[in-house]
Image 1 (cartoon, rainbow, N blue to C red):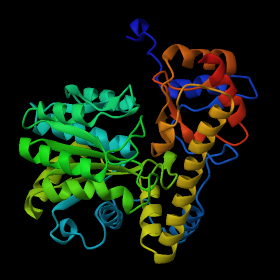
Image 2: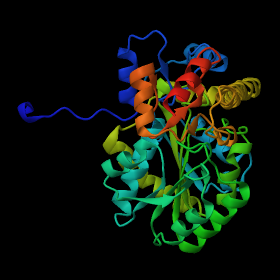
Image 3: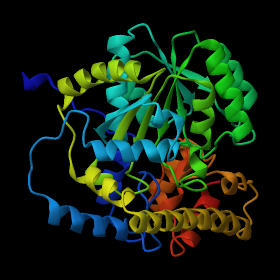
Length: 396
């Protein structure tokens, strides 16, 4: 049977990482894959994660299976992080959470649920969005559509076009919204714009699916849930896919969650019963280690405070690189305006570089950027900034 199998095309992002690893240039720079790096170009293990791991190993006395929805303490910690302590959704038990293998796993479980239980529903993705969104939902059997988001002329949010797109979404469809730090643009709606979006969704009967992978990397842990909290005031039902890859650095531990918000506790339980079937047919139950780390840190007042400081350090370094990048390009006499990158939030920015310019950077300078021009700002360091900006100047 295998004789007729053809080589699959490389992943547009992870495939670049493979090319980067094979590149022998000692001055190569990887700005493609979405992984945080410190000023030395390393992906660190947070001190709070190390401490939590020690406690977990000391207390661990079994490797038995977790429930299909994961560790209850973890799920409770996820909800509190999403909504805030004592939120009405938590108090009324309108939310139900399932621990999933990463944010990607949560998205796939959501896609499987939607395709099975709501087979006529299409999912609407921002244009542009994370490259893997469409492939995940297509693999789950869903039809993907696009709504307007970025204005190429200003490299900002085209809010009027976005609202017009939402008004054209049929009732009963699903719209994927980025909770903060939009990937790949780094462009987020303002609180006022979130309020308009929430009104439109409520009026039209559109189910929001919030991809919340970067909480803490825009303005702060509490500040970054502002958009989600606005949605919860106006839209009773939603799906939320969250991840701890970025804000805990748990990339390889695959630690995420799918949270259902429903009209009441009974409805939440009913929907979760269907989600559990999708989990059972897929991976049966989630991995334990990452969830125990998150639950340990968030469940300890001192560790939680220390973790918030560590997330702030990550956020501040990324913002420093945004400013340094724009200043260095300007200092080299680059005429193209990159100032909008300072206003964008999170790990990624849409640079405006063309596919041809990105190819030249890769071939001539061993600088790896996704073809769309998305740059992982966290891959920039003070040491590689001058070379990076000189190379960009040469291809513009």
